[in-house]
Length: 94
Figure 1 (cartoon, rainbow, N blue to C red):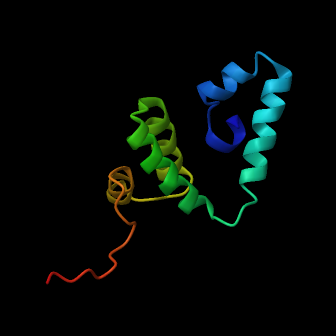
Figure 2: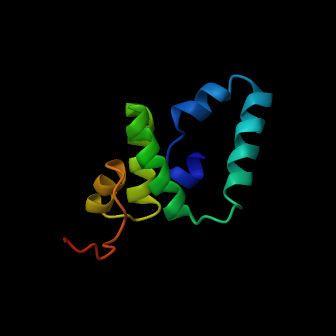
Figure 3: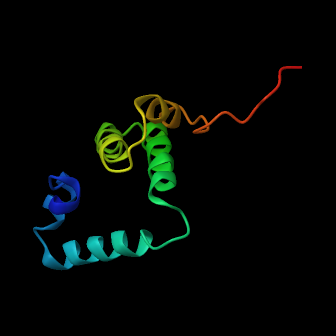
């Protein structure tokens, strides 16, 4: 994680107190990364969920990943946190 993110997130540092817990967390993370959703889509969802849950830690962590690893713009990160689509879908006022 440190090599991938540039620093070790607190969740992984805490899990490292138990090698079995850390192995499980890393295995889960690896398995999820092989799913049908690309990294940008996973981070968009994580940002929306972190905001709905009111989790400052998750908002900060996923904001960092979205900006620095996935390269989402600040504007898109803000839209994702509000649960808005990442792009204009052409909604027409009636």
